[in-house]
Amino acid sequence: MQSHYIYGVVESQRHPLAPDIRGLGGMPVYLIPWRTLAALVSDAPTEGYPADPAHATCHAAVVEAAMEGGPILPVRFGTLLGGTRRVISMLEEHSTAFEESLQRLRGRVEMGLKVLWEAGVAPPVEDHLPSDLDPSAGPGRRYLFQRLGEEQTSEAIRVRGEGLIQSIQTALDPLTEASTLRRFATPRLLLDAAYLVSRERLDMFCQGVERLEERGSGLRYLLSGPWPPYSFAHPLPSGAAMTLSDTQTPRWS
Amino acid sequence: MMRADLDHGVASRHITLLETLDRVLNRGVVVAGDLTISVADVDLIFVGLRLLLSSVETARGFHLTQEAPGGTRESATKNRQPAVSPSGMI
Amino acid sequence: MNPPAFEDKLHLAVGNLCDFQEEMERAGSATTPLPARINADPERVEQGLAKLVLTLIELLRQLMEKQALRRIEGGSLTSEEIERMGLTFLRLEAKMGELRAHFGLSEADLNLSLGPLGDLM
Image (cartoon, rainbow over the protein chains, first blue to last red):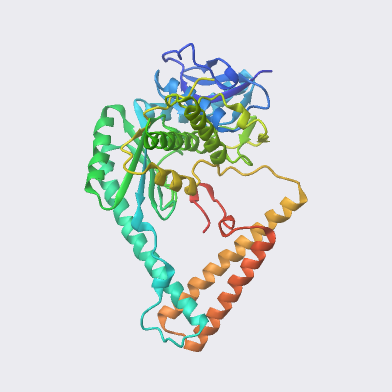
């Protein structure tokens, strides 16, 4: 029974993939259809392939090429299904969610934004001792007052950072359909975000980021894309919009 | 070719690689596969950087224009064992 | 395999790209949060358990320290009480350092990734 490595879920009615595209292990990529859906797969050995940059990049190239011919739900690296029947039952099981997602993602791309903020790094700890601390204070008190000072500084920095993130979101929300954010991934990496943007509005979105960049405010921007919509491909739970914790907050329109 | 351009090119390709890896490995639909390959013990950043460094060194040696590192440098990763687990996720 | 067609994926990269590269690597975005394969090597198992235990101790220490800071701010403690507490925290910090060194763990090792919820600490 043949193992299939799966790259993504697409519509069965779509433009064919370019014939020279090769998947992992140099294998041809093809569709296993079921009704309006299809799995984009290649034949693979049962043990799969190691998760290294070469294989991951090849996987990404296949998804990228597929995006040219229609919407695609990118599947995470490293999934193998044994046999055609398994693939079809997988499509059938999640068909409603897949169809809804493909509709939602048609004609949309993902853009990545990373924002560096030098002021996000707290000043060195020696500055945190309150000036009115009794010079004869013992090491225990000095330690705790130092920690208190550090905490207050961190809090002030965080509040300022949140304000900056908010103004970025306010500027970009009208130009995007969804976003996921990772705030304060490191002290300097204020924002690590992915945005879902329709192709027609892509230029406007990029200009929007350029305008933010022109504002300065001590922020530096790195815009990447367009990418296939990896960050927005997971099926919505039935019903309302998804909310996660502060570190990742997808917002659906 | 100017050193600064070469370094910018390297950083640019490395960042693109990081962005690609982040998406392909951490995002996307998670399907209950019969086999799901996890990335347990492979230090991808390190391996990725080595791939890029080796291609830069080669370019310098032969005074070639910048080439994107192709998916062909398997030798850097051959001694890494895949960490596989027959796990399923939603 | 195809050569990756990822030219021109970066726009608006202002200034020094290396800074972005550095932060992205620190943020660990290109390594997976998927659970590691279970390694039955006894030394690794011991280190894995130590990591878990020390992470929990570190979490508790941070929570207790926050409690202490709130009480100091609230003004309900005498100088002597603050000094005694501070010394305790300093001793605990030193002890943690010893334990980490014993198991070959860095400060950064003591954290748990909760996937979409971010890191524990």
